[in-house]
Image 1 (cartoon, protein in one colour):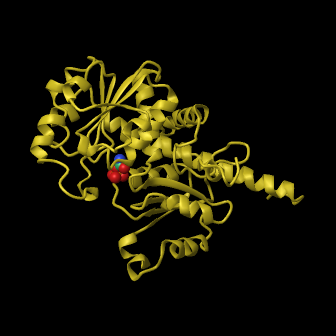
Image 2 (cartoon, protein in one colour):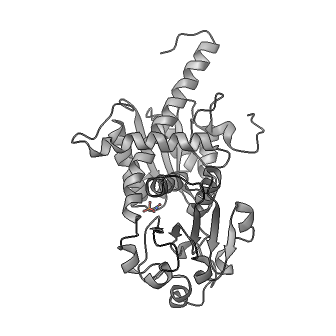
Image 3 (cartoon, protein in one colour):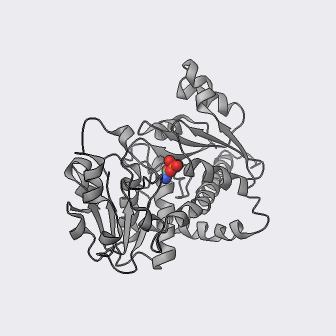
Length: 339
Ligand code: CP
């Protein structure tokens, strides 16, 4: 890996391939993704203890910087950091000096000056976290909690953990992602993860207006008809219509979208009988999913939320460990004693 590497791995991996930032799943191989899943598995038990804490990030400071709204991601990152014994600062962007015109870089510089060790960042601009990782002080880890339409890597990894728990693995699995794929950072990360982990087929089901023009190049087949698309599925992953990112009328109406692409019991019955139903949330009942399905026996939507804590514990502990290893390597290269 070099600074000219077209993948972001020169940024997110150490020289010996350990995670040091977590920006995207692009370029991360099956071995590393499996390592994240296995590490998360080992943290699930921590959440079942009476005292839900391990000391892996004791003395470290994690800053949650969410420039877009969030319920699940922000809460589970905070819980994950606390379960790792870190000190956690949640900056309230709406009352921060961002509202007085302070730039992202200056906000970061000031928070770095408070000896922060890790920033968990959600931003509406694709690539914002990549930009931050390029300039952040060595030793400080950047974790992407969703950037624009680009990537939501911890969401995809908690989805993979949930699939592995319910299906035992990925070989032979037929998985569909349904709905607003055009605006979805989640779908891009899911498609990447499913392909790398060996799913047999990733199927995008959506109207043409809600698909990126190059969707097949992401690593999926395309189906415009939901009834045909549901056939033989092991997993169906629904997506929310991201109206806040839509420019112009991409749909005749929400009602028409629900009729054609909303997941109800009738459409679910066309998949395999043990097909699981997933959704990253927030769900819009009666828009992309029927309540009887969202709350039904095949739904694993709340399992996904629970798994978010273990995955985020895994990613944060691995990135901090990579940063520490790299720092020690640099000290050893320069002949100084490691602290
Ligand atoms: N899945 C997800 O990112 O949800 P939030 O927007 O609530 O974090």
